Image 1 (cartoon, protein in one colour):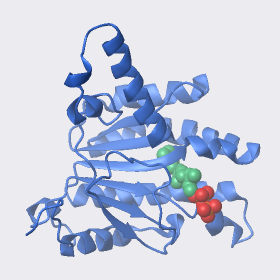
Image 2 (cartoon, helix red, strand yellow):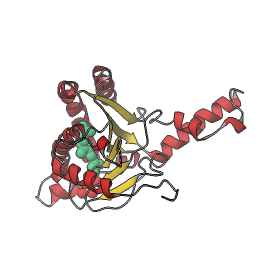
Image 3 (cartoon, protein in one colour):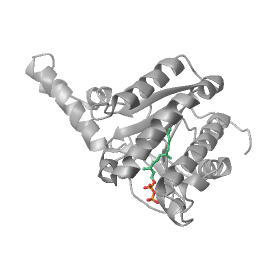
Image 4 (cartoon, helix red, strand yellow):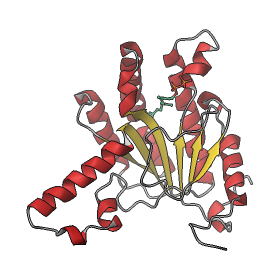
Amino acid sequence: MHGSNFNDMENGIRHVAVIMDGNGRWATSRGLERIEGHYRGVEAVRHTINAALEAGIEYLTIYAFSKENWGRQKDEVNGLMELFCKTISLEVPSLIEKGVRVRFLCDRAGLSEDVVGSLDYCENKTGHCERMTLLVALNYGARDEIVSAVKAIAAKAAGGEVSPSDIDEKMLESCLYTAAIPDPDLIIRTSGEQRLSNFLLWQAAYSEFYFTPVLWPDFTEESFREALCEFGRRKRRFGKTE
Ligand code: FPP
């Protein structure tokens, strides 16, 4: 599979989304602080980006921080915010070199100025890149995303811009963070957990799921290729018969 373009396969794949789980367990099982697991998780993100580029994937989405993650210990939350600030700015030259455009699926309200500054910097600097789009879900919650979309449409309806009968799936989709981005074909979750955890609820309607016991810091380019191979064996019917 090395070097092959998965878009040549029967099950053409454009968008892979990843729930990066298991950093904490990886760290505590080694007697390390949880934040060490998150730092090691950045390595796995690099491997995943490289493997996705090699496979010709157009969109790669990673779940970095959920709205619910604010409920963690203050130290861990602060450590993660510092990690995002540092890593996101530091990675910009390498992302540009690889042709990766970065966009954040993100509620910027509630994030510090430093974090918002690094997200804006990264989006602006990589905006011209065309080989792959990396979508980073950060301060993201799928229900919250849908509620925001509904509010935007309701405001238009109240202003007389749209009538309720005009509201359809396309209109709602156009108000999501992922407007104009194809739905994920494949969603990978590491660490053995098998749930969606408020990730891309609308967009996952017909996604294939791949669960692996591998903890996120141990996820390699080969792990990503294994997931793509499994995807290649799935029969996708989108609710129809064959
Ligand atoms: C889930 O593992 C992981 C997170 C909440 C953080 C993910 C963030 C990274 C991998 C860093 C990505 C970096 C950038 C720049 C986007 P967990 O802590 O829930 O693990 P556990 O279930 O073992 O406790």
